[in-house]
Image (cartoon, rainbow, N blue to C red; front, side):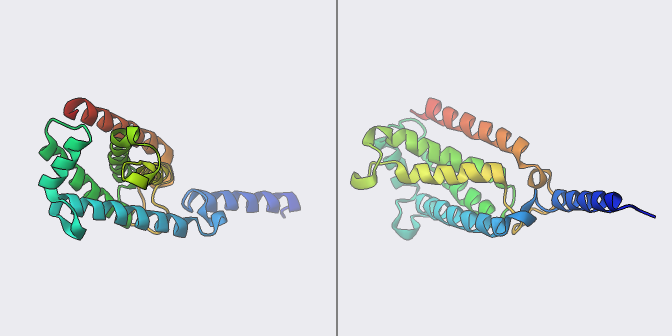
Amino acid sequence: MTSQGDDHQTSLLSGVEESENDDYGESGQGGLGFGLLILRLGLGAIMGAHGLQHLFGAFGGPGVGGFAHVLEMYGYHKQTTLLSWVTGITEVAGGALVIVGLFTPLAAAGLLGVAANVVYAKFHGGFFLGTGQGWEFELLLGLCALTLIFTGSGRISLETNTPWRKRPLPLGFISLLLAAAASVVVVVLTR
């Protein structure tokens, strides 16, 4: 025979087990998984499209040679063709991985690194985009990527039983450090 207190304790424990097995407590968050999907689709599509512009001249973009010239105008003077390729591939691959929700913290770190370098390059031009020199848009993209680094992909993704999906914070910090290190390396080696 169980007491009413034992029944209450059992129901509390089963609730804890459900929340631990349910995408870091998403069951109580209603639309969190859907919201993260929308964020991933938007960020991945925008960054992927920029990458296609930089690599192949798609959507009226400059292609690798033209993008290398643009990088020179922003103060990158060494290895601009290589940097064009690396940036474009990072944008396309990172955007695709973010969209499908696979290796999300690392993919978002790559996108954050690209956005951070653009903000750094445009910083002297002012915050607002009015003259094409502002960096508000890239800052917003970087903040979206930073968010995904720490939240992970959410429920609607290809990541099902990965350690970073259940506990995104540790890989989030590692991914943030990788993004910062990559940004610094790019600035030091190419400016």
